[in-house]
Length: 343
Ligand SMILES: [Fe+2]
Image (tube, rainbow, N blue to C red; front, side):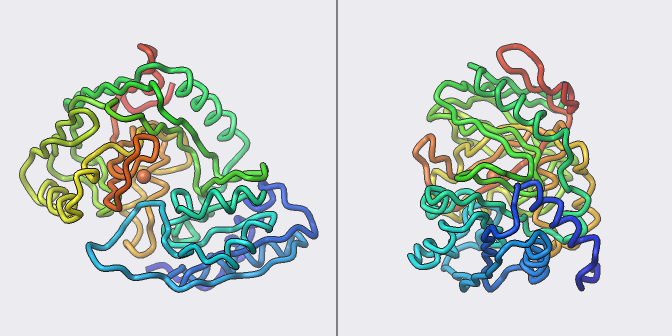
């Protein structure tokens, strides 16, 4: 494992990202942690906010532990538990640096925090070395905005690959978005690392076959796929998981553990745009030092996810994020990703 005492370069990286959030001296920065937060992250956030001249405070809430299968990779922190005084403090801050383990992206409390005018920056639960490598530059924001615009304009997305993927996604009624790792606009949320354009499709919009080939990734397990898995998808739901070996067995076992049909349905679809993010980085970190946002964002991956999708009216705690390499993604017949390369 890498050593985790604080390094000047890590403070510089937090300073760079907080500066891109347009903080000014005197602004109020809330650093939100839970008891299972990686300890370096809130410390770095406090140092960087202080360097800018902000007023900074930290709130630490207990990490809830619930019965059932371990929850991973949902982006829906349960740490806030609707605690009204905590929500009031966060909502009235200029910036919330979200250092919860899962992040507030899909937490039920997020709308109330944003409504207060706060902006929220989720710092993914990564080793700071990875965050340093993925400090956003000037090129990422316009690139992501351009692709979000294309997603919003599209009626149909089609995804194919030499491995056998053939997926048709109707974009009618989809909610599209993207992020680039910082935000300066009150009432918005982002995450660092960023570099992703995605859509939450409406109900009954996804059909076809998704083939996870060797080297594709199941980020819930933090494993590269070693033996192919074929997912048959009908009206959003995975109806068959075909394949032999540990990868397919793990997938069948964990998804069934929820006892919830909606765990089989599509959550979001999209693609990565971050050229600084590396596909191979998961091989270089211990699991406890790695949350996988880099692999969601690496340029040209097609990201398919199962689980909760508010747009389609589905709520579940089972969630797979599956970045695929070497796919071609077209929007209304126009390729945006060609064989794993962003066009
Ligand atoms: Fe996801």
